[in-house]
Every structure is written in C-alpha cells, then in structure tokens.
Length: 169
Image 1 (cartoon, rainbow, N blue to C red):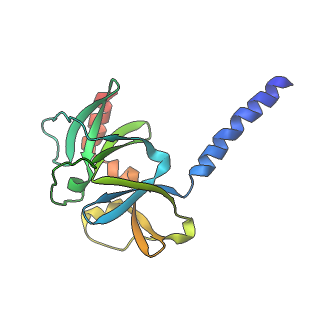
Image 2: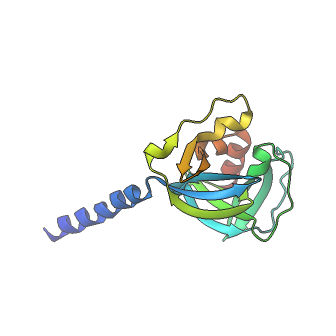
C-alpha cells in the first residue's frame, strides 16, 4: 500500500511541472526585435564562449562548444534569419535548448526574461514569403508590445544540424 502512494505522488509532480510551463516563454533580443521560445525547451543560458569552427557548415552554424564534456552545435539566430552579423558583446548569450533529445546552443544578442503569454494572447503568424517566416509559431501580445514567438523545432530542423547532433552524441 505504501508503494502505491509513493508512485502516485511521484507521477503527480511531472504533470504539474508540465502544466506550470504552459504559456511561459523565454524572451530575448535579436537586432531590433523581441523573440520568445517556449521555456520547456530551454535547459540553460550561458555567456558567450569560445566556439570551435566546423568546416563545410552553413554560415548560421557557428560551430561547436564543449559544455561540461558534451560537444553541442551552436547556431547564430541572427545569421539564421539572414540579419547582418554583429560582434559578440558582454550581453550576448547562448540559450541551450533540447528538442527531441537533441541539444543545440542558440546565440542571441541578449536574454530578457521569462513571461506568461496565455493562448488567447497569441495570434497566428503573418503570412510571409521570407524564409525566416517559417520559424514563427505566433505573435504574442504582451501589454502594448508584440513578441515574435519562434517554433524551436522548425528553427533547429536542418540537415546540417541533424548531422551535427548525430556526430556529437
């Protein structure tokens, strides 16, 4: 009887944890815009560090870093969106995300905060022919501002990243 109670209790926090992350987004700044990604994909935020180049990769794949013994690919989100390159500064961060057991670092200009955006405050993305439009999950209305909410799966999906994450496993 005691074991049944223990297992029931251990299952409950998992459901609660999933539920408490719903509608929460880590927001960050790139160029002149604020973006957000679902917090459930974020494992940590680290300062910019030395990135090892990997030959024959598209320019938005900056290379790899060694994060506590794990080699992970790093994508510069600015370059992924075909924005002009900018020198890394003190506020430049790497947002480490995990999607489908693939860990990737995303270089952003600066991290802002974690905010709640209820489903009712998220509008569908505008229809656009620009390549970067395919990465947009929706537009989050927060007070008088709009946050561009990114679909992390689509942002990370590419044959180049698939190959790099397979090699680093």
